[in-house]
Every structure is written in C-alpha cells, then in structure tokens.
Image (cartoon, rainbow, N blue to C red; front, side, top):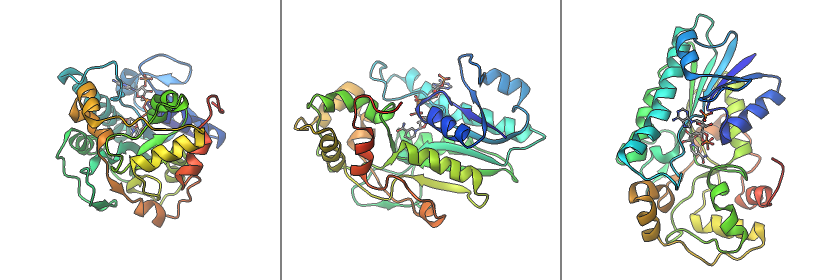
Length: 298
Ligand code: NDP
C-alpha cells in the first residue's frame, strides 16, 4: 500500500506522511531534492507512478508568504506553476498508469472564494476568479483532471494551524514575546483548521470510498482574526496589544498578497460534516492550547 505525496517534505506533507505511516502505509514523496523516500518530478514524468500506488496527494506549492521574496511577476509565476504544473504532472501520471490508484487528493485553498464580510460559503458556492488567489485556485483545480474510476477529492484548506509551519510558525515569536496583535481591523474572517484535523481529513478521504469532490478543509467554528488573536495570546499567557495596520502589510507585501491576511471569508465545511468526519480541534481555544508552547512535540 504505497501513497505518493507531491510536496511531502513540507509542513502539511510531512505531517500527513507521518500519520499515514502510522496507519501502515508506505509513503513516497515527489520532491525537488533527493532523499531516501523521494522521487523527482522528472522521474515521475518519465517513469510514472511507483508500483502499487493506491493514493496520490498533492501538497506542493511555493510558499507565497515568504517575506524575503518580493511580489514580482516572476515570483507570482513560480507560486502559480509550483501548484498548477505539479498537479498536472500527478494527474497525467495517474491517467497513464495501468494499475490506477483509487484516489487523487489535491490540497488547494479557501482563496477560491471571494473575500467578503457578508457572504457565507459552502462547497456549492461559486468561485469567482476575481483576484490573484481565486484565479490561481480555479487553474489549480482544473489541473486535477483525472479520469474515473479514480476518485478526485479537492480540499480547499483554510489557514493550517500547527507549531512548525504556515501562519503559526511566522507569528509565534512576536506573540511569544508579547508584541503580537490583530491584523487590520481584526474583523475579517479567518478560516482555519488544525494540522492534525487536516491530515486526518485527508486520511479519511483516502479510506472512505464514498468521499469525492470538493471539501472545505476548515473547522466548523467560524472566527475572525481578532478572535484568533485573543485565543492565541491567552493560550501563550501573553498580551497582544500591537495591531498590525493594513497599510503597513500592503506596503511590505504588496496589497495583492497581503489580502490573504487582511481579508477573509466565512467558510462552512458542510460536505465534510455531511460525510460524518469528526474534528479533534473544533474549537480555536483548544487548538491554540495544543501549539502554544515554545518546544512542543515535533
Ligand atoms: P510548505 O512550504 O511547507 O511545503 C510545500 C512543499 O512544496 C515543499 O515541501 C516543497 O517540496 C514543495 N515546493 C515548493 N516550491 C516548489 C516548486 N517550485 N516546485 C515544486 N514543489 C515545490 O507548504 P505547506 O505544507 O504549508 O502547504 C502545502 C500546500 O497546501 C501549498 O500548495 C499551499 O498553498 C496549500 N495550503 C497551505 C495552507 C497553510 O496554511 N499551510 C493553507 C491552504 C493551502 P520540495 O522542496 O521537497 O520540492
């Protein structure tokens, strides 16, 4: 029982690999660097999927919140290609394989939905393609073009919360030293999911043959950035009195990229709940308590 993970060396991919291995799967990664469990993207292109691959998951994508990288046309292209081309390459390998995997899972983002203070989105809501991120998600999901009987599951993930990656890794130290705070007005929604629940949801989607189509990979509890800020600061036992003005983020990151933090969407995981998935961290206070330690389990 082999599972192939594109970007399996990253924050989500690594946590997913560990969960799957603890459930008896053999995990291989598609990665740019060599490694004992890695194959390269060109090996995938020329030799196809490893034998007896029962599931393929794509968690690859250039980090766009990399503050050392300017938001240039070249970098935006890299952000786009690292998601769309890797998804295309995996879909092609699946379509050309003789011994087909049962399922292809792609982790995309809630950026598919237009940021709004009033709209509520479930999986049946339209994606507008109105800004960079929603256009990217539309292209990315189109690239996941696999033919039946392979099941396709697309998980539109919210901000993935865990100590060693994504948003928390970036904001842990300012909050730890008591200089954290809300972003902008703090009233914008913050769709979120704990890393353990995201990897458990992917595992659930691999093993439940009825699961297919789009799933909103978010916790059922809808919160704002301000609510998150209070909860994280409380879990750390620190104040969080230093709001980050939207204009500063727009200046430092470019408004097109900063919107991922300054704007948000009210997203409901309707289909996830309909399938009967049980969250371990449905409450933000509980989630924050899990990762609010300088050196918790790695
Ligand atoms: P990481 O940056 O931790 O990992 C991403 C992985 O993608 C890396 O392991 C890297 O693998 C691979 N990668 C990076 N750049 C490229 C490239 N140019 N070409 C091919 N592969 C590349 O990200 P996360 O694990 O946090 O996120 C994984 C995916 O999930 C991304 O697509 C992201 O947009 C999406 N997502 C993440 C969220 C989050 O909060 N973390 C929220 C919503 C969606 P290697 O270096 O080994 O090749």
